[in-house]
Image (cartoon, rainbow, N blue to C red; front, side, top):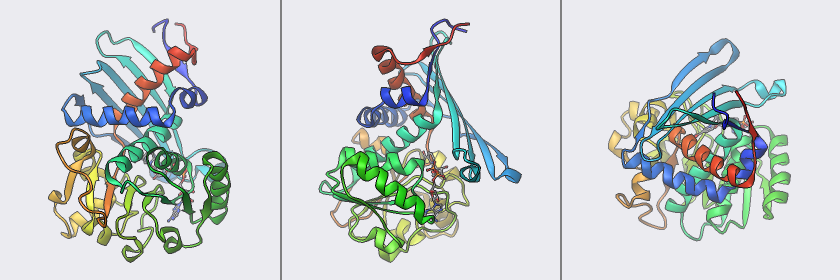
Length: 329
Ligand SMILES: NC(=O)c1ccc[n+]([C@@H]2O[C@H](COP(=O)([O-])OP(=O)(O)OC[C@H]3O[C@@H](n4cnc5c(N)ncnc54)[C@H](O)[C@@H]3O)[C@@H](O)[C@H]2O)c1
């Protein structure tokens, strides 16, 4: 083990990686992916069905940054009732030219920041420039960084949040109003949540659509981050069919994104309906929004190069700021 190995706790990760920095790290991550500089095996999922959970193993290699990363993340949906977080994780960052392990990072905080940041980047590339009203579905961990990311890229003046647990929506609204300095209100129904919304984020483990297609306002941009298995769905098939669909990574989306797999299997759309990977838009190879009233949908399942680029940026900034705990062999 290297004497330089650094451990970054959740607090250190958050201090080392503010949202705007994280969005730039995601711009870099998706550009590298589109340029073919990344080895990104489909993630390995080990299900623990009797405990309603799974472990996901996510490695990546960036040839341009000469770095490896490995994330071990577990997702247990009954954990909130046990007083534990749904997602627990660590990320290991390794030098790609010597194999020296550089850092171990608390992965749940890194995941929440990079998942928010990917939606922030997508919103920057796809939402109307004047998007001012946000609607968030789910009031959990990802929902917080989703809203934070929207506020980093658009002049968001108000937000609503809907959760199947109204008390969680109330708590989210109070906390985020205080943190972001804009009014955030709980919405009793999905329809109320979407009323006049310009930018929408869905961050739930739902297996049924969260709203009706007719409730989506013209010109809205949607970031759908929750569904990472074929049986999970947040966005109605009718919305997917009429939206301009952008994904984080085509191969991963076709394997995991329930929102897209359901309409693909039923023949409502073909694979050509996925108009771009986010990185292709970053590089200017594909266009983003084409009309003010178009519905745009960024479907993310989360890919390991996001963890690598977020971890690399967090480590560089932690070294500068003197954050983290050295681990000696
Ligand atoms: N795309 C990515 O990169 C990425 C990254 C991390 C997590 N995720 C996924 O995002 C989802 C949310 O993760 P989290 O960490 O925020 O979980 P969480 O448990 O902290 O929050 C989920 C929230 O959704 C609410 N909810 C459940 N069903 C709902 C419904 N039908 N309508 C409204 N609200 C509902 C729950 O009450 C809870 O408050 C999970 O499925 C997770 O696996 C995706």
